[in-house]
Image (cartoon, rainbow over all chains, first blue to last red; front, side, top):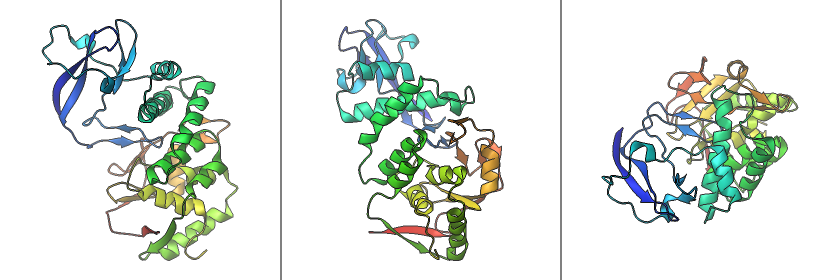
Length: 238
Length: 71
């Protein structure tokens, strides 16, 4: 991983300087992919796309600020580097109507979700760190943004529904579209048998949950294929 | 269901017995009366699920059972 020069922005409201780290290069060695879509990659860290001005409290996206200034701005010290976003900050920004576009709203809602789940992710709590109504309200608000045919959207929608406890809807979401699967290779017999077992134990909560799990954040659609296959509950011999 | 497969965007697959998966997730916090598990992670390179070593098999891209879509 090679860090790049810090970019220095000015708060659109008060002009206070804040810096954002950049990367010259990175990789995903050692990356951990979580079922809620978060990727933690030590060699490819994510730097925030928005921040709260430490002088005036104005929340803004860097893309809405003026072009970055030279990094040697004497006002900018290490303490002025933008921090990662936490759920409280995202929730406040959403409540204040800070997002100016759909991608910005999705960005904040995903970070709210991931930040709240971090407590569970890292074993600090059995439940997300934000209040239940905030957690559910955020996931409910995410759903309309993931109704497109893109496989990654479909998988994310199913995961949102799963975390809302709407397992049947999660399974149904995976069936949206006119996709037809076909099996290539020599695993037909094995997998058909596996699916038969799924059908036999369909009422088992754990099986139902597993069928809805998105196990890796991918845009290839590969996971979707598998989940769809499981969710559909019909193997090549079934 | 006896086996679970996890697919990754490099085309590789990680196959693990469901019992192993359940064992790995047993320590994972569950919400809402045990109906929601996770988030959790899968690391095929280390053969681990959520930090627990499991006896899974990694299939390189293009090997093992393949699924594809026809539209």
